[in-house]
Length: 104
Image (tube, rainbow, N blue to C red; front, side):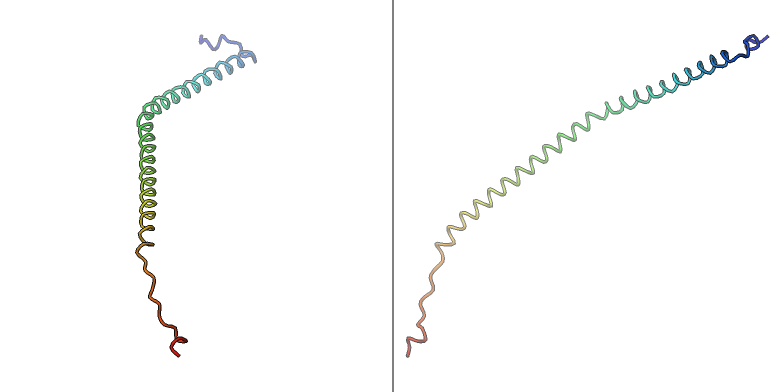
């Protein structure tokens, strides 16, 4: 005689089997989610170090470019200021030409 034959075919037995099946399915689903999360966590944790290194590299590159831009702007301003003083000293006033009315 099989073990299932001894079980009464009642509503309570059916609900017990249904509940046990739902619990086993839920446990299997939760275990699969947990294992996937564990795998994702480990792969993300391994990828953090190179990503952090790339982030700091980008920050330092940005600061270097900003420093070059500031230095070029200061040099350009100094050049324009020094060139402006020379330009005024080198200009000469044009010679006065006789007016046409004065020759009459």
